[in-house]
Image (cartoon, rainbow, N blue to C red; front, side):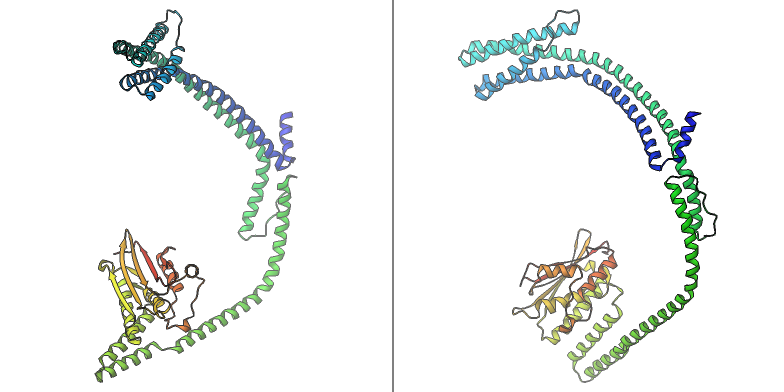
Length: 497
């Protein structure tokens, strides 16, 4: 009964105290369990690590013995100081290792074998020293005899070490199996313990959080009704003195305030709706006026009929060049008006560039030198209309128009991996990197009144390419500096025919 009373008393405490208590209890249980699991597992793993330590030691002894033999042989063959230095280093390492082997007389065969290896190794090292001394004293018979005896002893030692290692491995394998089985038992115990602690934690958390979630559920149900637009609800009952109780009181007051606000809002709704309708009507009239103003600026049919009449007149007067020029101008303007926002092929865009260059060369007496290098298999690539001509126009107006040398513009279309690249390069005055950065970020706007522009700026081209392909890296501007020209490259991804 006392425990139940203490649990009920939690309902009047603050949320912070309730959550802190739940956290401390569950954390303490998990911490104790983890310490227990860590201790047992660590002891088992330490035992497992020691199982094969003797095998590792025997492998190291075998490797060092081989190094002693090889370094001795190397010195006998070469008499080099490096070989002698290696020999004495490995000699010392091996000597230290064998003195860690057992020297006790025992009934255990493995310990007896260790004692034999130790004694035989001492004899072997003595023979290697004699062979080295014989070589240093140029006593050929002495060092040859000692070397042959040492070599026989070396082979026998390696065989004994290998056999001992194998026997040790068999014993250790049995010990490892016993330890592994024990570790698996500990794992099962740990899992069961964790499950039990988890259930206990769930019970504790449910009891401690019920005082928080129960009034919150009532508040959430009322809030859901209010969210659906129904403010005519019964006020939520306040059942606790904690933060949830404070929020519940505030919620009830909020509902009352919203009811009053809605009444005031309804009173003003009709007036605002009438004002909004008038505003929308004025905007519609303004847009209609702007459209009519733009249409009044130029009538496309009148422009085409006028240019066609001029072309017919030039043909009747046998002015073939004038006829061709007027016809090209009509084609150019027709493309500008009809294709400005359409999807077109690269073939159509290049044709428009050819027409544009032709018109410029008529105007400027052939000063615009233009060349193309186009992969014909890529001409069906799709892109937005009026993409290439504005770039060529920039190359003319801001690149080669006012240079003293012969201006040249080169158009290339090629494939690079899975990307179709469209390059427009001039040999003009170039562009500073600061200006390139402003163009690419949309912060540069040229004065179109000073040039013969069609009104489609480079920033417009960049924005349309980004929208069309849904990518940001669609265009790059490259210029190495003043009087080194400019190259603009368009990248078309996954659109090559």
